[in-house]
Image (cartoon, rainbow, N blue to C red; front, side, top):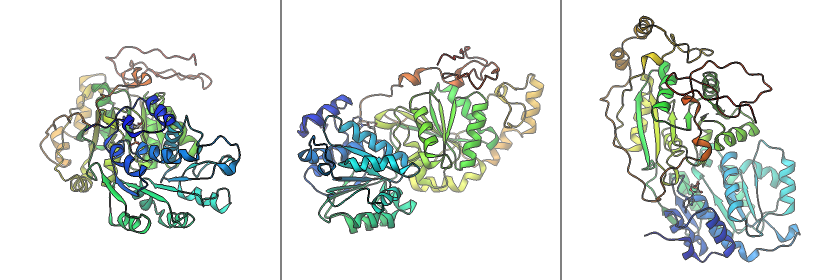
Length: 491
Ligand code: AMP
């Protein structure tokens, strides 16, 4: 049964914000959690990312806080009443943005604090008074110690992505923070899985919680079409480009396992003319936010990232996720591919499996509870670079005679030989995933993403532009068959 937001009797200011975001019907987690939180009950929720979880806790909390809504400028009239804790800066930033949107037509204030940024502007915001404080645990403790915020009037606490917070080792910080809060409060805990550690945390801090589970834990979204291709390490970049082109993809996440690998891959794809940026833990907070912003706005087509970006980040309408490396931790696969097929849109998840990945694939099969079939993908020989790809080589440095192409193929071993080195199995194409009944809107690319991505742009060697001239979006790129895209410098 579909429930609409109008059935909730939310305050007109909240209803207006929801309508402005274009939502009419609640998602399953919202339909189950919102009425329970409105009653003041504690909640233990298992929900996949992309299910509308943020609104599921934000809307009822704002509704309950509406009795404190006031226009006073005095900080004392705006004490912290709701605390939302998240494991990473990016997630905190994203949730805070959503809180701001839902609270837009109220006088309830909100802010976000996370590490890696100057404390002063955060302190100034806190001193002005905020009803909703979104935070990562470490930075919140810094502010508590500096006496920048008082938490004795907190009525609601949300522990979001709680399993991740425990993985990162935030348990002692969480325990300390919770010790500063009034005992009488509503506590909501959301986690991808209900592991024994999560259950222990819930037993210690939640009172008679209502358990809400909208999807089997460790499930992958039914809207994501998943493929596992046998690919030699040396062929991964070309395979990536071929699939991007063949599928007509506009944007994609490309996940790798190491920070160094991430920086290297992004650099080499950028050199090959693909409009790419990198996101990993060695980048400064500012660089990370800028990289995300560039991807979100469509200014870059490929976001090469480590698992720092795998959890919960909500970037609308990303049509594909590539696992350039199979993740070391099988659960990260679920989070990575959760970046696509969000909110009912259809998505594609492609994983490159090399001979070394047999153990990781075994872990993944165990987690997902099914056999994963490996497929073979024929690389277009004439698109191959001359010899092994080295940084600095361009995609257009291709063999120009059939003989050269044959020599390269021979030097790399025959396809049957290479396939024999990879984990074996019959190539079977899994059926296309059915549409998700949760939502009825199909994937619609954003306007920015409508623009021709760099892998579809024409093959023409790029001239080295002056560093003073900014290319607006596209760089002439790679492939002979595609039309020539102009380089624009009018920004
Ligand atoms: P979340 O799981 O909170 O990260 O939300 C995933 C995405 O779903 C976000 O882009 C939300 O804006 C979107 N969303 C939230 N609620 C709804 C709804 N009722 N209908 C459609 N989309 C929604």
